[in-house]
Length: 113
Image (cartoon, rainbow, N blue to C red; front, side, top):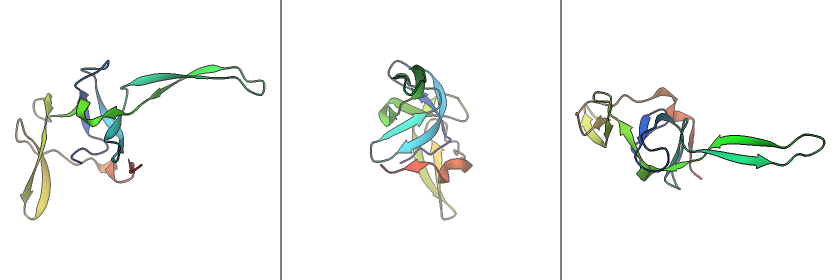
């Protein structure tokens, strides 16, 4: 997978088309990602034990095909490529050729199921 947690992305299709946000979680086996502030849903929770019912807002995952990485140079959607420099695999934006910095928080929030 070419995207990582913390990468800035833009939504290409759906009701939130054009919105931007950063990736919060990756669901590798389902090919979906959770993007901050995108694809908001409302769940109605029934009241129990004297508590009143409420409406809870949460953000649902979105398909990988509906998002694209934001180019660091042009701030427009771009595809991601790889090149090997000095024995290391480096991600780069295909539109501008600029190296994409690796987000530091990517190590802990990847989910396989």
